[in-house]
Amino acid sequence: MPKIFEQDGFLFFFYMNEHEPVHVHVMRQGKKAKFEIVGGKAVVKIKGKLSASDLKKAATIASENSGLIETKWHEIFDK
Image (cartoon, rainbow, N blue to C red):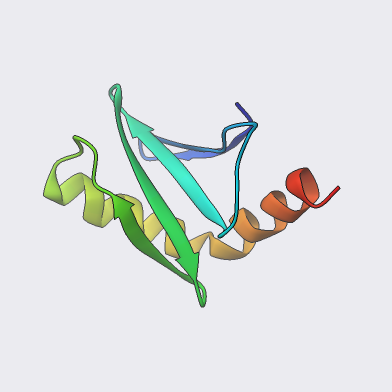
């Protein structure tokens, strides 16, 4: 499970068997969600069990770091 970064109690990561489109998984306090990166923005694909406020915060963080997420995705999966 490649860790991308942690911020404000959220862990952003990929699984090793990922597939297109570019997306990131996020976990906070054992609860997970999934965001697709579209045009530099994070779009919720799977809400999981994160609260609405945690989803909003995670989406903001993922959007602010979309460039890093996309760069790491291509470094890891475009081989």
